[in-house]
Image (cartoon, one colour):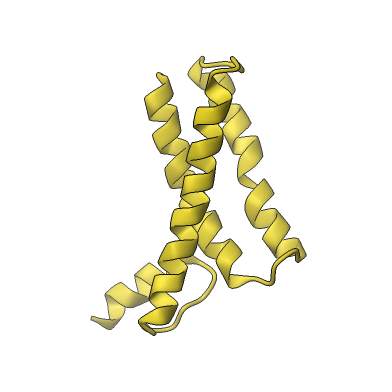
Amino acid sequence: MNLILVVIIIYVLNIPFGYWRQNVRKFSLQWALSIHLPIPVIIIIRIYSGIGFKFITYPVLVAAFALGQLTGSLIYKSRVKRQQLAVSGCIIMDLYRGRNQD
């Protein structure tokens, strides 16, 4: 697996966690979990993808992590601002409910 594919996977993986993070109180247990739960998965992806732990991969993967979290939080804020249906802390359930309401 090359670095670009790993970056895309990490970015997409972090979108639901950023969505969840935006829904909970800052510095609470759930907030900390929403940031730290994807990290073991990212380590496993790094090991099995073969990119290893080279220094050059750190800034790229940290940026993908942060952008995924940011994208998830922006999606949450957008849904709340538009008051689109019921908004919970789970993007998957919110999208499912939104699809069934139409």
